[in-house]
Length: 154
Image 1 (cartoon, rainbow, N blue to C red):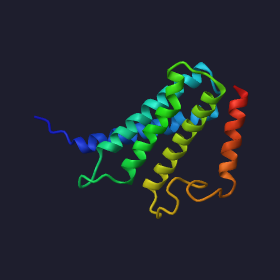
Image 2: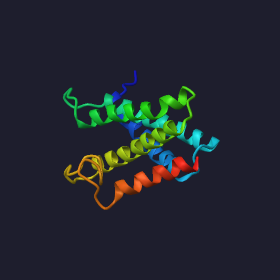
Image 3: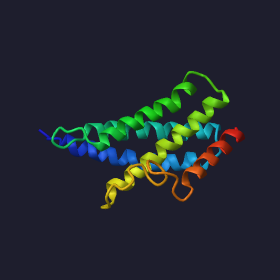
């Protein structure tokens, strides 16, 4: 009988889904919005990110709920808020702006989480530059401008 190390299998799935989400998320952000391609690549991104978060919630040390588990829950909530109005068929300007904001933040959080888990640096700013500590280097202003421009171009 073959023995399966479930912790290792979940961790491997987590990494594969994370790489897929990083690539698909970057493609969604760089391509024109509202197209069929945007929706297809976005679906791949969301499914991969859900797998990443479910796997993150399944991985644990000493049965403790840690900071990465909390980030996984926050990511799932952000995705749900960003997608639910669109899935219900609502397409107002406010809904599209909320979708753009939530999905951009889901990618930004996801990228910063990846950087934090792979680096040896301390957690000086848990959600990346410009969040939880003020507008550093104008990053938050750039994101707000990008979101306004994206909403106008739809």
